[in-house]
Amino acid sequence: MSVRTRFAPSPTGYLHIGGARTALFNFLFARRHGGQYLLRIEDTDRQRSTPEAVQQILESLEWLGLTPDEPPVLQSQREPRHVEIAKALLAKGAAYLAYDTPEELAAMRAEAEAQKRTFKYDGSRWIDMDPAKAPSVPPAIRIKAPREGETVVKDLVQGEVRVAASELDDMIILRSDGTPTYLHAVVVDDHDMDITHVIRGDDHLTNTFRQCMVYDAMGWRRPHFAHVPLIHGQDGAKLSKRHGAVGALEFREQGFLPEAVCNYLLRLGWGHGDTEIISREEAIKIFDIADVGRAASRMDYAKLTHFNGVWLRAADDDRLTKEVLARYAKRGVAFGTEGAVRLRSLMPDLKERAKTLEELAGAALFAVADGAPQPDAKAAAILTPEARAMLGDLAQFLGDAPWERKDLEQWLRDYAEVKGLKLGQVAQPLRAALTGSTQSPPIDAVLAALGKSEAVARLLAAAEE
Image 1 (cartoon, rainbow, N blue to C red):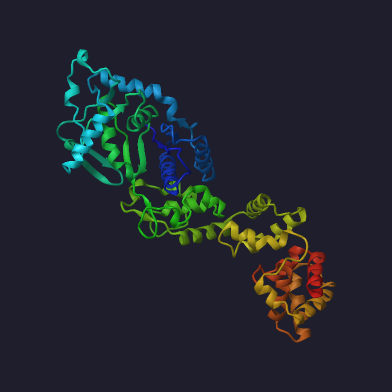
Image 2: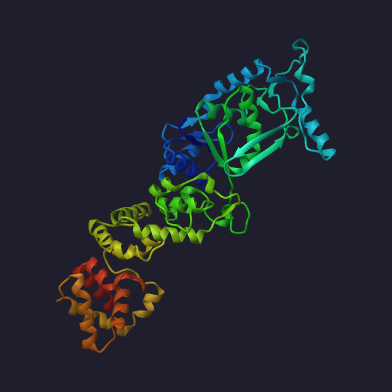
């Protein structure tokens, strides 16, 4: 049977970075084995699920390059099938009608709490009840839990895990209002979708033993389970907003590349020797779920930023130019065709210093607009009256220069030598006037990208202030 995995998020909010890693592991495992990776939107929580969250999940997965191989399945549209299987279990005697009222169940829980014991539902009074004596209240359908022995799951990450029958109770599979429960619906959907491997967070491990009751009662083959440890913050606590960004699209807004995020998530809890920078193609070749560790991982934003810098330097210059211009357009930053050409010309040098697209956009801003940029505090301090006078003189000198990058550095060296200055004494005020900053690509690259008329105009403007 072909490997089929699925990612099954609940659309109650943004796609958490932990969910993104789960989707990535499902995708890579399926690709490694030549199988299919599917998506199921588990939207049965009608009060909390929203269309906006569904769209955000789809957008996040598309950005990460984790688009499913088949159209997404909406769990809410499969409710009739969930009801059908619940009634089939009832008909074969593997489940029964339970007529407990909410008040009665609350009293049972309160009694268990008072006796300091774990509440375990005891449905003995309903299992063999004569239907003629049934109360006149809508019943729920409960599955019959095993009464002896134990349930064994051979987890691909956690190893062999056992739970005694005494720890399981008769869970509800169909509520008294006729709606299926999540734990029941998941099993029916995974079976009908021919899922062979369920790869998910280890917070679902306890659910697995309850879901096995449905598989076993229906005579269905269980899928292979792999429960992946969760991602924590650096302090060891559950990852949350206080640690930093946690939503997949937040990382996009902050200027991270999808390949960098996926590369980082791949290495977060999974290892393959000392190799860290791994392409999607290589990851598909080497990914093995057995290499996932059992301990929780800790999110390291500094390391993610390092990964992003590596991928940024390797990225196509045209792509990065397009990404930066899109950020400018979104913020209302004006730029024309000439500004875009300047940006593209500088991109090979700009990307060497940046760690994120945000940094790249900030560093490149001087290039896209016409006119001298407003200098920051450090640049303004360099632009002394003496420096401004020199810039006016330099503008005249450069007016005769051949405007090729290979020639411009030598012209600057010649100017410094004639004036009895060090190259840095010329280059730093020049950089401040042209870019408004003390940090930029090499000054000859900046001059070449701006062009003679724009560069000279900026120098003259600085000299006249």
